[in-house]
Image (cartoon, rainbow, N blue to C red; front, top):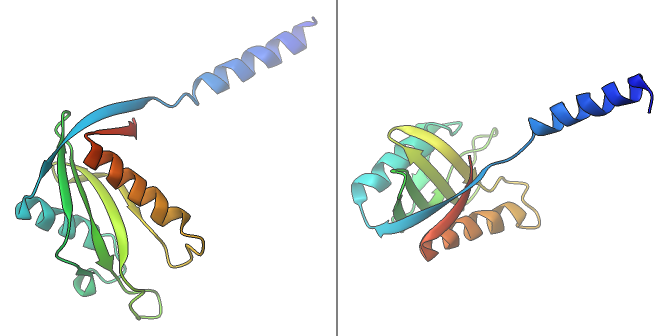
Length: 135
């Protein structure tokens, strides 16, 4: 093997080593904390186009993890760029204190429901007592 090829393979190995994803399994415990839901509503609404106009349904599921993170699954309706409501969509938010670590919400163009299914799966994992996160 010539030196150029060896150098190229070494460079590729170094680049690929930076692409390793560390999945972490966390255990979850259900909580029906209205305070936690209210905190999630503020953090989710802050990421919307018109935070003051963001609407939430009262039904939610909330969990605390063994790492101290908090997870809330719920339903939100927000305005699009045209100023109209897009319809209620499910959301998943994982928080640490007042910091959002993960937020998933189906977009308007989720034609095949792939984003919505990913959110439902994440919420079902949290409900099962164990959830995998990318960390």
